[in-house]
Every structure is written in C-alpha cells, then in structure tokens.
Length: 204
Image (cartoon, rainbow, N blue to C red; front, side, top):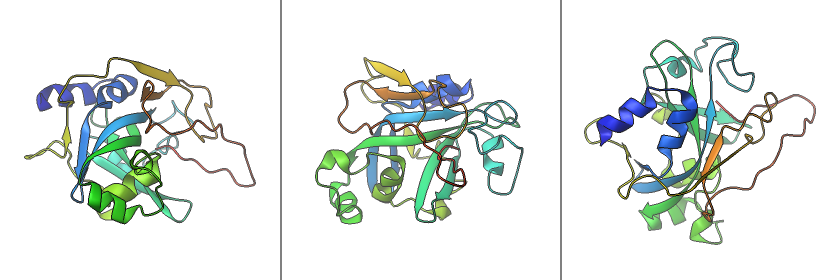
C-alpha cells in the first residue's frame, strides 16, 4: 500500500494531490486524516508556486525526490507543510490544507485551545501544522520511511472528491488544483486572494 502511494506521489502533481486525500499523517503524537489539499507545479509553469523563479535554499526540497516534507513559515507566525511530489529534479509539491484528527485528540486540543469543535482542530494549513506540532525542524522529513508517517487510506480513497480554485494565491487564481473530500466538515472555507500592498503567496 505504501509502495502504491509512493508511485502516486512520483506522478503529476494534480494526480498526487488527489491520491493524498484520505491518507493519514502522523506527527507530534497526533494523526490527521487528510481532507483538503492543494497542488503546486514548478519552475516556469506555475506563478503561484514557491519554485516559480527557480531553486533557492528555502524551496530546494521541492525539487525532489518525492515523499519528503516541505515546511515553510508564512505571515511571520504560521507554519505550513507540503508533500513533495513528481520526478527528482523537477519542483512540485502538495500543500496539506485540512484534516480530521483521528488519533491524539488530547494533544491536538492542547495545541489548539481556540478551536471550538474537533472539526476545527486542523481546518486550514496553519491549524493542521499546529495540531500536529509541525515546525521548521520537520522540513526534509521523509514521510514514507519505516514506519511511514504518511499512510494510504485504510478504507480506500474517498468516494467523492471536489475540485476548485486554489486559496489566497496571487497568480493563476483559477487553476482548479484544490481538492477536498466532498461534504467533509473539516474542509476550510474558500477565499479568493485580494491584494493588499505587497503580494504574499500561501502555496508552495
């Protein structure tokens, strides 16, 4: 099963993104079932991607190989985590936007005391990282190791998946590369980016 996931992650980024829905990610004593993700392609192809202008020390992990964690700090206060995808040497990654905490609820609640319900614990990319205790040190972690931190869905792929435009990006606004489990209460609300002063990217 993990081998099948590794194969999917090595493919096109939009296909890899869909394959991540329903998978579980474990970190910091908490496990989250992924319900919303967002795909970003690489150099010269996707103006919303962190790798659009080429390799930098920050985005180097995006250039592969697949299966590693790309963590970045945004707005001076939040971490976001992505799964690197595609072939080695070509940048692409999938932002993990939301999920359901399925194990380690006490730890997730302690890290997210402002959450009014369990559905809000990991609703949104920064909240997901907070619930999992993911910070900069998680950058470069291999997620498919032994034991794997990222596992395929125990019950198979979700029955219904929706797709739509990505959230908060300053370029390629309407590329339908945000995927989510249809009707899942943990999925975040869609907000189109409205520029205010200097532009900021939320995707990898």
